Image (cartoon, rainbow, N blue to C red):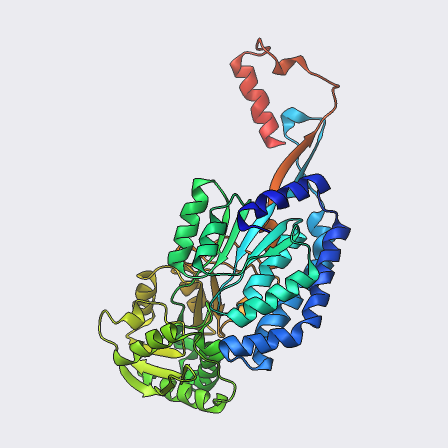
Length: 462
């Protein structure tokens, strides 16, 4: 199917078919679920070829999350599709009011390269559950996965329901210029801005899942200070795991750590120990030479405390801790998106929060403290797509918490019910009979304004 004709043909198919029933949507979701199982081996091989992911990491961080989303949608679709009863406006008595959710039509999903399977197909689950057709554009930077997903989609769906277009930036730009009913993009902030601008010219709604420098704050409250250092090993292991996963190429990975100055050395020692224990056998690689060189350049800006090794042939960079970064260092201005972790000492929590507020709102913010007052203080003085206390990344792994950014880190939410709502359009429905038909609403006015005012005030209290 030619790229320029896809949305028109899919919309024509949807119009001729009529709204997709719950049974049809569930059937498509089950077809995708079965297809994932049939193509699992090829998908795992592709993820290893593109990003060096082990089968265990590829399954847990990609295939499992798609299966989880599919099963959640199958369990809850009936309730999501049910119209919601709403209060009838007083002027419309007697009557019935409800809120319905209609499919928006043909949806374009542009996926990233860092999780080239999960972040392409998880939104597809929501799009199908919402009753839409879809066009998938996988990332050209993960070519093996792109081919494997193309085989999966071709095996499962007719192009009128779900189509896939491979290619590079030219193909993405050509697709974005087409009259889709909704565009979902996961990737960099710069590209997201361009897509939003192009879509805005046609008033096409967009869901943008972008990036941002996700900070991790390590500041004990006074009440927990006595035993805090004893917990540093767990804190370090959780931060290190968030950076280790997918070689740091995760949009919600901890980008840098802001730590109380007196805990700087103990925390770095604990982080180094955690990376040592994780080892090298399960560690992924940079997606290409361009990103390999970019991430390596950050090592020249500060003092390397741990790691620093690299292999240009395999595109692997060791987990690396750096500190003593000078003002204006690129590592503190650009999203690192790799296994380099700056650790920055601060004289107190308020100084750290001022640094956080001085940067664009991140996709995620992490803070390590068990003190509720401190947690509330952090929450009330920062902005982020998600906020996680005493762990990293796990806030996005379920189906009950919507996933998305704010400001430069994105707009819109999906996962679970939020995904169903993102790809549907609310329609208010009011039903009335022709009787009774009271004269007071029609001109000329039947009541002077003072009496009308009393009537409306009474109705406002009901």
